Length: 506
Image 1 (tube, one colour):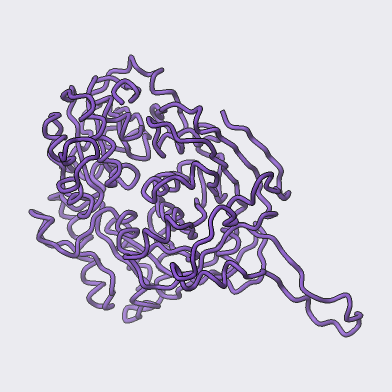
Image 2 (cartoon, rainbow, N blue to C red):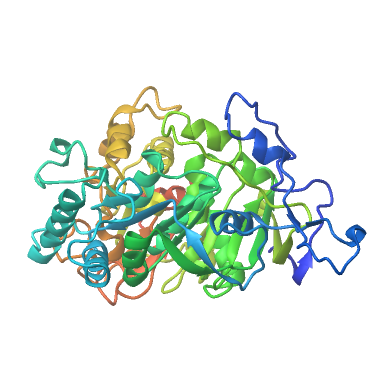
């Protein structure tokens, strides 16, 4: 259970350090040349000149803000903001994909004109990823619409796919948009990223404001480069303690969602801090931020640090300015977790907040396991699953489907040695364990898709999945049952044919 402190619109003062205010490290200026100003900057606003008042009553006024408020203030050219304000925000990047892209393009052309040009051809990122490897004509047509539009507008970042029979024949094709955004350097601290997908919040792991929007809003952003947004209040989640060897970030976010419910963070920012968060890799931080929308969150955010900057070094040459919450910033609520005491959890059907300990579900018989998606299909997710399978020395007892998120992840699965496995790669371990051959990178069965989608639940089966939602029909059949879990728990369950605590094999 979490220790909860609720203090609506009241300042929280750090007891031992100002969490999120960069007190735990001091990156060198050479590591990131545009950080110096942001570190020493005092955010202030000058009081307006009023001749009727004595000069001594005017001067600078300090206003403490959270990370999200600071980002939105900068991008709206404001010196200070309060939760609840409606502001026009300048957008750094807009992402859309094959499901929402055609609708967004249609709205853009309707409202701005058939011959209108987008506001910035280098700030729009278009990524086919959802319904790709299918014979469905309408799904295929969606990708054609994206291609025609990108050629017409000369969009710089269009990750196209033409040969569906062999994804490797398409060098521009990436895969799942949220992981591709990170791998291709489109996620940068201090920026605003909007996408026509609810899991755009994944990018909050980089210390930026990232959130999903609808087609209408995206059509407007496409032409204007800005959007009217309401400033969300911020909830703070302090995760401290050494991460147990059997836990992953998926366990942490399922624990949090189970604590606050799927409506607990509705239109709020969720800021993650603490020693546990600081120890997480970028991919694990992405998992944490990815599912804030499952709690109703507007966005999730993690203070950027050396782990963030090192990840970005070879991915972008664009300068960025990290921001951090002030020590006396106002948080609407605070939750504290001692991670060292947590256990592996799952979300039972049919809601992400239907939390239960994995060991409490040991009698639940399953029919299949699915490892993939923006939440659980990254390189480290497959490495974790392979590590457990190798440690067990056993074969899986149910069909186990593997869908790497991107081309890079797919290559990693076939090339990177799994630590402690004698040089074996994930693909070799998966083959020895009797898993399905890793599929072409895409969103796959995470959201059902056309009936011929790989690993889609076309029958009312029971599945343990590393994906993000388990509502009725989410992965296909309306009577299917989905248990959301970490890659460790998913792999352990594949070995037994029941929902299984990974500690049995680790």
